[in-house]
Length: 388
Image 1 (cartoon, rainbow, N blue to C red):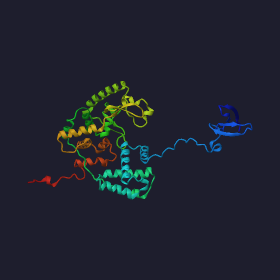
Image 2 (spheres, one colour):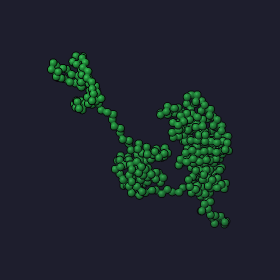
Image 3 (spheres, rainbow, N blue to C red):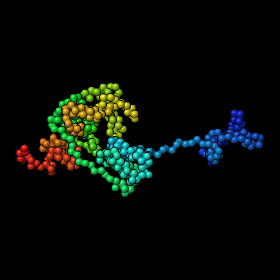
Image 4 (tube, one colour):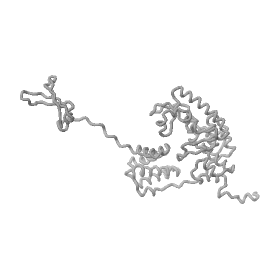
């Protein structure tokens, strides 16, 4: 291997020998005597390998090894890879965290069927949770062991699944629905009319975008609904004029936001990378935007979120109380009433199923029980006689 040697005068230290080659890592400073013997050497720079030349030399440590991801971060990553909803992620992480704390912070890999059964039993016996909550915790733990820890054990399928009771939905009559709707004004009234007139779920209404409302065909396209499914439902004529006026006000607000350097909204998936300016376009704006901005920490954009669902929930609760109803009606009650009133008007149950977005018609059949038109819809013998 070729190398070059240059001898220079050292500042008060004698000559300095610098060696250059592909393997050079150190610079050697030395003091020479008449016999050419090196009496003192100090490695001070880059030129020979430290281990081979100066094993006593302390080398600077390299970058620290990355820490392995924490368990709950692995759970979040596994959920996002499968494109589960944010609410599913939040619920699963919460249940897994409670499971770990229930067993004094033991790692789930060190636990098994006994610990899982004890946790689920505690939920049902001590906390008295509903069957759906118990089954949610069970699903979260099965996901943890199978998809995150990679544990395939026979006891996973033997964990008890709670039997869910069959409840009949709360349904308002037409007069009760009218009484509730008349006690709301402004944006909550428009949203409540859509819940009842189109059979929307609460978050489906809050997350409507301008491009999904078609006034020409009187249709509303529901994007990424329950089960990540799209569907088409009707745009009620009773709310069409109010909705058009509301959207005109939203458009004026959006133009003012653009002039202030804002006007952004969150886009689904990776659309922001594919269409960098789509977040400011009118078509992607929320039909029901929030009243304030927020600053996105990743992009630095000043955005508006959609109106929070609690705003409509409080408005409906106040309207039900003002109407003097004894029924525990909520926002979802409007959806139940929508389906029931369509069946009362003799519409086909398959059509109602598609409008509601049910995967199976058996889910829609529950409204026939409310109507007393199901298999148990028989006439009482007491109706044919006079009772004292």
